[in-house]
Length: 187
Image 1 (cartoon, one colour):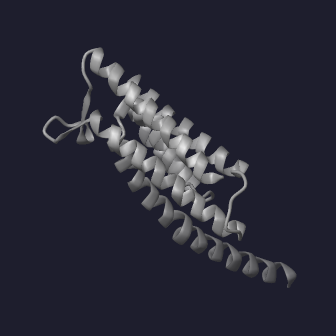
Image 2: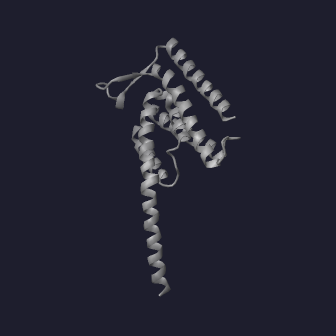
């Protein structure tokens, strides 16, 4: 069942990126983007998105399937859980918001938004495959597929560290603090 969903969604993403590239080609050329938006650094053409985006979609949907099957405890997955759809949609909107603010010239707000993501990563597992896929798809129209994939991968690593390492440390400190204060209040 999920294999069919993976095939359809990957085909849809492939058709969408190829349509966008064809439209760009016939309306002034396919753009490229310099790394870190600096002219002295290499330029990456959006043509790479025709390969990167379908492959990334297929891979991330595979990772989602494996994680969900493992948590489900069964060899098959009947339907996609709502929390996965919500996480994907939130990440899609997050990526699109970053792209819109960049296009409108509000680059100074992007840092604050990313700091909010890091704060959110302490409470929610925003490093999961559905979040990365939504983030990349949300930014693809503005930045192509390669740069959002690279930036998203770095954000995933940071989010894993925050959620898997820093969060448990905060929870342990909170637990000890509550025990100390509860002993002090009991006396």
